[in-house]
Length: 335
Ligand SMILES: NC(=O)C1=CN([C@@H]2O[C@H](COP(=O)(O)OP(=O)(O)OC[C@H]3O[C@@H](n4cnc5c(N)ncnc54)[C@H](OP(=O)(O)O)[C@@H]3O)[C@@H](O)[C@H]2O)C=CC1
Ligand SMILES: CC(C)(CO)C(=O)C(=O)O
Image (tube, rainbow, N blue to C red; front, side, top):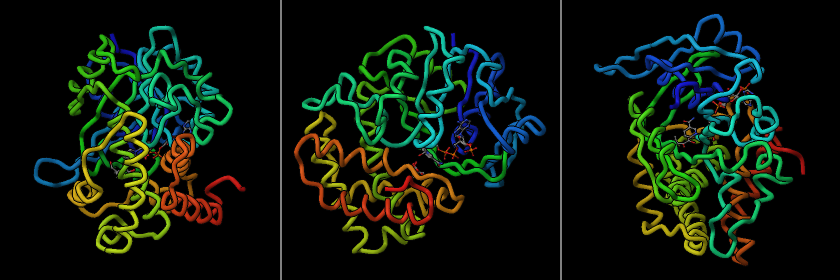
């Protein structure tokens, strides 16, 4: 039974998921948050702004238990980890009081997760990625046996502390890292569906992660670098072509590790274009002055390429530029 649920990270996606779950009777939803956001959650509750039936924004408000001390929230049935990737080391260091042997940890984040190659990846199976979990602290803090993978096909943003806005998308893909069809993944799917989310199960969550990453590893850093939203990026033939070349390198890597993509970069661009003009989360982070997810989205792909002995000149160029730009802004650790 997944009744006691903690959302670790009360930002855009965490706020959306937390509010949807808190609206369900019989569930106890808590949130790990900090600073002004924690104060706002305690004072005003968790507020979610969604587009209503006639296209007008509708706000709902939900009472949740909120704390910056996981120990005060206690052991959970489900912990949804929904922070930006650079925050994961800190989460892993503090998550223990929420975990019992039965606890499910759902990683609802973009990019290559730290557990991606555990028991998976053909020639690179079992490798720990330096770019994602350099000294293994995340792997030690969040045991693999607890983890379920998740791909979030939705867009949300933080409007104010404790107030999140859902823009589009309602789809969550869930899967065991092993690919097994287990009772707990079915239970989680049922829970999320009950909360109105289009949750599906995947027998290869790594493949779904790679497909989503294919868009994020190009659009997010290119938008972050240029300050442009998605439409201008994809309308510029040179930039679109550059993104396609990066994606071809990632497709080759995916092919070698067991996540083959049958689509072309152009197919994927069309999927992104169908979402309309939007600001990817990394561009939102530049505007908010927050640490960027460059390692999970881009350095990880390059590292897997290196492990396979593949050259990735276009990925290298995008990574180099994105890192330099982020360093200049103080949003990425110094060299
Ligand atoms: N936004 C979007 O539309 C989408 C985002 N994603 C992915 O989902 C993940 C989450 O993104 P998003 O929701 O946008 O991120 P946000 O930055 O909006 O939210 C992350 C939250 O985590 C909090 N946090 C970080 N570290 C801690 C900590 N140690 N203790 C407590 N709280 C902490 C942050 O608090 P603080 O502000 O104090 O740092 C912030 O509130 C990312 O991987 C992103 O790429 C996927 C699909 C769409
Ligand atoms: C592009 C988008 C909204 C797609 O879900 C996303 O993943 C992001 O903003 O990081």
